[in-house]
Image 1 (cartoon, helix red, strand yellow):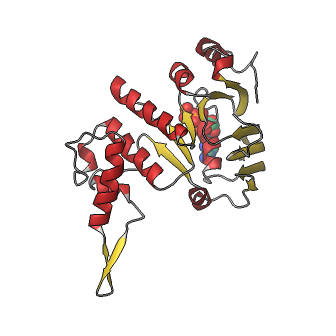
Image 2: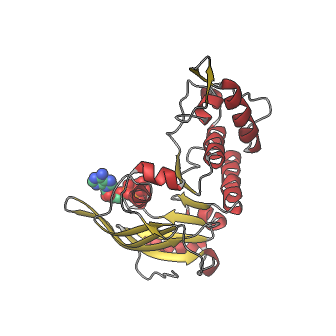
Length: 257
Ligand SMILES: Nc1ncnc2c1ncn2[C@@H]1O[C@H](COP(=O)(O)OP(=O)(O)OP(=O)(O)O)[C@@H](O)[C@H]1O
């Protein structure tokens, strides 16, 4: 990581309360393009809440978030989408009964006009989605006219990841992306995460699997009870040590940030 670079996302002294419940506590974090960040922590640690702030779902109670050095003034999902933040979740994001091509363009369908009347441009959708999804690992015999319902779990993730890249995102948040996947599918999704990082994107990878994330990530951020309790480059700590920090609930931890 080059600390002279402007972080793609910077969080400063961030707090978020839901009524009297203090869900995020004084979080400071700098995340750079070209990094694969593992975000780990026990159930209820605050991982999803933190990414929900980054993606504009929640506004913080206090503190700041900056995108590429610019302070976010208005927290709204549209703002985050415009900046190029895309969240890929295991169970949402695709419509089973629509084709792969339609899913690829969900909500941003290209339109062509014939005699001034707008029609969905199916040809353009097929071509663009075909080029991308096969690069991202769909079997050769899968057609982009097939319904998403016919795809395996890993292939569904491929469609979402391909879509995120095609629409020029800068930050991909992968929330438990390999849950319920087979070993090979898991490997495939993890390879895609690496590819995204190598293309210069910031990848935030949320998981409970410390060993998987230790293999994959450049840096691991551990949360516990709403606070960031460790922020370490993976070469500074073994996966066993990371797991121990989580087991200890953040006591005896290191923060390399
Ligand atoms: N909208 C909300 N209103 C009230 N409390 C909330 C809300 N969203 C989250 N919380 C609480 O904030 C805490 C952190 O939840 P969060 O979902 O961020 O944890 P997590 O680390 O993502 O956990 P998991 O791994 O189980 O998904 C939990 O105690 C949760 O109940």
